[in-house]
Image (tube, rainbow, N blue to C red):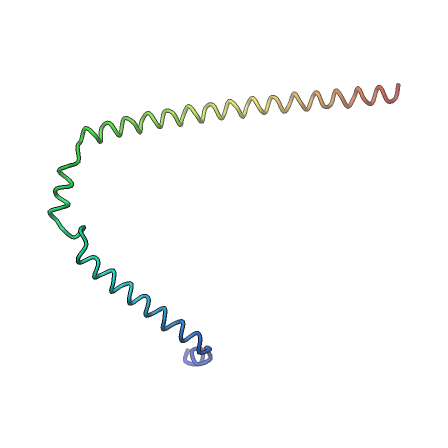
Amino acid sequence: MEKVISELPPSAYVIFVISLAVIYAVQRFGLWQGEKGPSASNEKAQVAAVIVDPSALNRLSDQVGKLVDSVVSLVEVGEELTKTESHMAIELDRIREELRIQREISRRG
C-alpha cells in the first residue's frame, strides 16, 4: 500500500488534499447551517401541521383520481391509434403489392 501511495505524482497528493478540505468545509458549513436553520424549530413544525386543512387534502385526492382517469383514457386512445395504424400499414402493404403486380403485368403485356 505504501508503495502505491509513494508512486503517485505530486498533483494527485494536491488533489487529494483539496478534496479532503472541500469535504471538511462542506460538512462544517452544513452542520453550522443545520443548527441555525428554520427547520430546527419544533414550534414552527407544529404550527405548520395545524395549518394543513384536511378538506384541501381531500380535494387534492379527488383531483388526483380525476387525473388518473384522464391518463387511463389517454392510454386507451393511444392503444386504439396503434391498432388503426397497424391496419393502415397492412392495407398500404396490400396496395403496394397490387401496384407491383400491375406494373409487372403491364411490363410483360
